[in-house]
Image 1 (cartoon, rainbow, N blue to C red):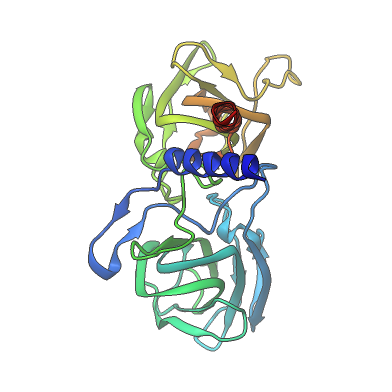
Image 2 (tube, rainbow, N blue to C red):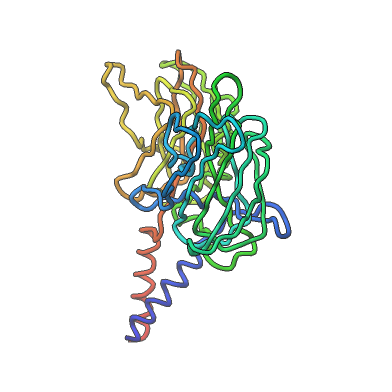
Length: 348
């Protein structure tokens, strides 16, 4: 029994020493941890939050999947028929656990003048608080803050009019949730399956325009590659610390003729995460709108991530590169075991 207690104590100390929180943005009651907790992946690469339902009045699903509202991806979805402020749709979102939230980021591809939204939140799915009163949509991407409150369930409702121009479509893209800096529990750690590319440093790039925006956590940004099959563009990022990666996600605004994602511990020796397809005989991987999530066969240690490729006739845009780590990490568990054994031997 004593041996078990010693080992447990060693594990707790090691975990707390390794864990690191995200940066805090803002000040006072509006300050929050700079990571989207609405999109967290498990070790199997599956999202831990979910969109559990879509309710609507007077509108029709036009394209896409409502679930994509929290997938960290540029791919949007839209509804038609939202011709006035009596037509609405509502998404019901369940986070993986209770967080103390005080900020949402909303992103739209298209919306009509006069379109409004409201957000209601709950920690038990029974008792609801209106975090954001019904108000006008003020842009294609904007933050909205509210008094910090414990949240696991979110009702996100949007009213027409519909989209701009002749389409008449209202296009929500993404809802991101942020934990208040005042939180005392469930503070997101960098090794818990959240996107760890936010804040990663761009080490170098070649023939890439605006590539720094591709890891800023906002799906409304994108970068365009140059180059050709014989002279591909590329970019390298430093995560800032060694991490055991479980998945890497690429979000595309428009397709590339070829794109390869690789990881490295030292920035010199690289391991490709996906073998290029050879269906057309060119040995190239075609990446289309929406992108993809690469789930690693096993947690793999890395510090640097590289993309390389070209768009050619597809005039492609790369929107977002995300990477996800796991807890507990293999190296950490090895240290825990060794530390526990050392303590046991000392007691003998």
